Image 1 (cartoon, rainbow, N blue to C red):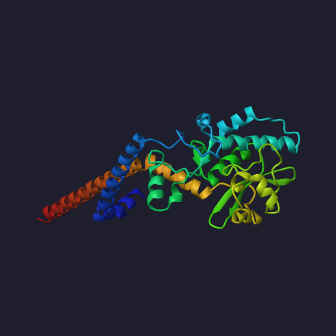
Image 2 (cartoon, rainbow, N blue to C red):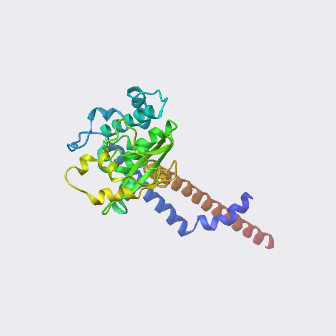
Length: 308
């Protein structure tokens, strides 16, 4: 079997195309390794000095909270945990809602070159959403978050504690929005960390029917509707898209981010190792070819001598 491998593989391993492949892997591996070194030397994204708007409740003390686990720990310490009734659950979840409002200001968080240079460059050059962070623990490392990013963090904390959760999509006249729903009190309850809906510790409104009436919207968002009517905003709540239960994370984008993270840190060295392995294979193939040629020459010489 091994001899068959070499007999069939030698023409391939010694071809110009195979040599070109080795050269391409060497160049690409070297370039990616250089980028990995630059990535290692570059600053990462994360929590830092930020200027929230007056309407936001951001508190820089939350800069030390940098993972879902640490936020869950803060939540359990600060908030009441004796969930003996729907009202207790409402206060518990409302407390987390308030904590996350202190943790984030509105704005998309993207991977920096120092975090994941592949996702960063793809986000800059191909599609900005590729660079937008969707992994929950990476979101918690940021001071800013979009509606979807803040909702993902909120729902992930509750999901890990055993709550039934789902995402909620809204469509306004000129934009979309992403919020959250948690099941308790025999209903799906609405929360919006990003726009800081005024749920506080009261029972959140029921969105099981896929809509909110105008009175509930005005009660949730007085800070948005205080300066005049926003019919497009209110209209957006007449048709809410409740995602399937347990659905709130962009799993395909998460998978892409895990892959690009691996490639950005280990892709270059792996390509160089592959090039070295193929170069060794080519060297062995060439040596076997030369040995075969030498044996054929010696055999021919011997037959000529015997004939003589």
